Length: 242
Image (cartoon, rainbow, N blue to C red; front, side, top):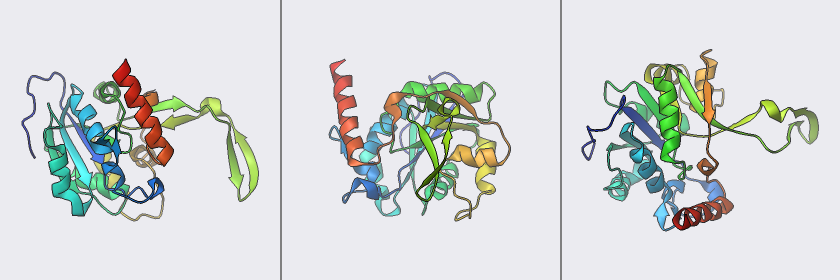
């Protein structure tokens, strides 16, 4: 762990886990997704800067590619002001990476955020809102946005249903959890499990534990395709001009 945390920060200390071990094949050839630049700065650096700027976050643990640990540490040196930083080797899939990062969280931190480096522009205020909802009594919290597109359920090449989008929400990160709940969820969903889960809240739902929602943020979108990099560049430009 590097860098002293800011003990003057108020509120219960929070640990933020950043999943950054994915290769990002849909972005095309090149560096792993977390190291792709936006505005001349890697996605991972944007994500860590924002999390570290949240008043509640004291520790940031990054799950990085196993062959890029020193590169990641060097990249993030000086980019986590206000929070301690640790870099660990991520796993073969997202749950394994979260487990690796969760295992590096020091004792005494009972609120844990899980964030994707692929959402580099999620503002600090979003992390603070999620953490505050967990600290206020929720066991699990996700930021969400209303679904604006019509959503069809299909079977092969046939539409079998049109879903009521009024009850649907698109889920973002960071997601927040009581530490014991997140640990239990991962203990009961072993690596390589037969049931696919795409986020940690899905694991918690399988335990029968309520997952609460808070308003998401339009700038917390996921960078998946080349066009998303262009959108991120536009957001950064608009921030600079504001």
